[in-house]
Length: 168
Length: 250
Image (tube, rainbow over all chains, first blue to last red; front, side, top):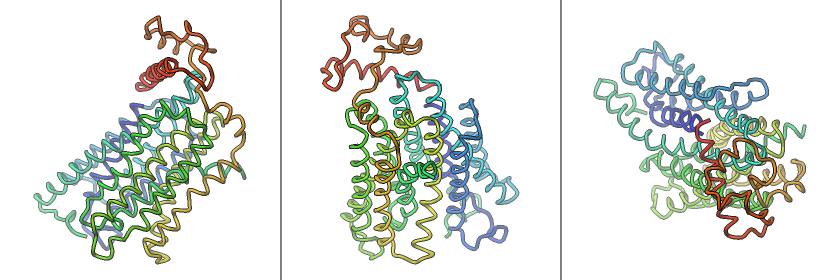
């Protein structure tokens, strides 16, 4: 449960809190409006999730904490980028967002695969259902975190001369 | 072919959740924070998944599926049919109705997820792969379908949401027509196989050792199937708490 919870906290804090502030000057991007960034990040993220959640028959990972920690690295990386822009262009953000989706999806399916394979037969049905609380729990925590993070990051950017997050 | 179709429960179960999130801005207007919609979309799911594993085994799977389909369709209809935010008079009552619709859909998707994950135990490892892929597809299909309906085709938000409220019905078809072996499930759905009753493995045994001797299942008569007394229910609950605790750190 813990890796699944962790990965979802990091993932949804990125999606709800950090992603709305990952903006670039429009002439350096494929976009014409600032409101186009967020749904595009979301679509790329969803694509990553779909691919890794579909990868169960082909990819086996045993370590669950490692991808969860990598997801926290993503969160830190994107949040620090929002504060001190260092990624050269938007394509790096696209790549990280895709990677974020891949990590989240693989932890989800691998968690339940391991329960299916490792938990004793008599406990299995209960365990599969009981563990499903982790992702929703993570999203709830991230919902609250995200509100604070988005307000904080946008405020920081405006205070440092970048007011894109207040434009559409 | 039918194997491909088993992605449906995962897809349908999660797709309304994604559609609601995609439509958040259109639903409540810019004045209400979008995170509020996210919370209404997730907290009920969370509470269901947190508590239901301890009691939902009393409800057979076929009843659960019927209930969840009804809940999510009703929820979506409530969201779609309450007056929209577009007609400027975004009254509080309409937002309350929409939020309660979202709560119903959320309860249904939480209950559905925990039930179908439990079912993968009976359907075998392939079903987990299909479930995972279906739920992953829901993100793409849900956000894509909303943009397609409202922007590309140009349906109104209300018409689109009305159309989507019929999606859960597909779940009935998948579960009652496509998925095999429901007779087996009906028989098994009333009780979890009580721990300690048959194959007691090392893990479970060490868990059970935490329970004081006087209430150990091994020292009790076999729980009577279906008509469990209150002390059996209490014991079951305790065992399940221990199981859940052992799951926290993998």
